[in-house]
Image (tube, rainbow over all chains, first blue to last red; front, side, top):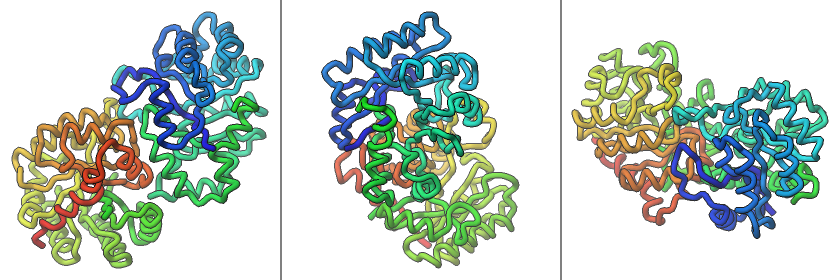
Length: 253
Length: 254
């Protein structure tokens, strides 16, 4: 069993993607032997009314829910977002919300971010912080997305000491000593000529990591190749590939 | 044969990874050999510092012969010392080419003696390159060579074996590819941490498989993974992973 916590479908406004549809993602997952994936809709990155992308996502995933788990996007500066979040949970059956602060016009350490996270938790939803979608060094001049200032995530995390967050595309662990440690996609830690992943695992333990590829924005093979070559015993490998995220999502998978 | 044409190491790990860790990573992923340098990336690259760095690579080559090949890093701003260092490292010690960083752009006249020397010996020049999309990032490396700079250098020296470094090095890689269409003699290394879907297929489509050289630049899983995943047949993948660079190595007259 393999669960990919970081996949996307939809249109990326700043570059032509080879594949964009839910059926493409499923084909990629089949090829890479990924059983299930948490998926967001890139269309919601720049929609004024972000929630429309959630409705689209639910429609695209119809008939594919056994493989694809939808993740909501939400703009806490946009009128009506509380109702939208409720609709995500109750009608669209979404149990996780991804935060994209740069694209939706707020800071990760701001009051609106905290309010969104608090509301999601009240609804029993899980929260993922997206460290970055693409490498900001190559971003389009109109693309506001930068790497989240890692230091600024501390205020938000500290406000919710009992909640585990999914940390996507973060380049280092930022929640040392937390009561509820966060989960990081292991394959972001691939430098040092292939040896960094091993070092991070030794330092933090396998319980802190999950598998994330960033399909369909990126190639999926590098993450899986890194994971395959990583020296993990069977139990730890299972934890990284699906066990940790299954526990995090509490019955969704 | 898998040849990583863009790596960095020092024998003791004092800069970049240690030679032993480099080879450990190579073994983990099945890389036969890695072509390494130890460039000075900030501060003044004086001749004595340059020599020290090259000595760390030379010692790495001696520690892991045939697994680690070396590029001689030079600062062409010190013209005579640069040529002397190239002679020492390539003729005397068996390095396979020259590594240039962002001290000057590739088409700056200060580079011409180095390029001409490399043409004479038919050895490759691996040049740090990129086009950071954000202006603030371009300001940090004002002499970073873009594809346009390579095109200018290649027009002057079409016989030079110029390698434009790391298409995935963190910049506007699409722009780099488009620019390199105007520099048909320039090779492109596939290294860097960026693994955007479709990148390698786009390189092949725009530039042709014969101009692409496999590289990791320290990101081994990403370096190999994006080649393995690219929609190319095995012959093309083989050419990128090693065949093209083997041909370059065979051309050397040193």
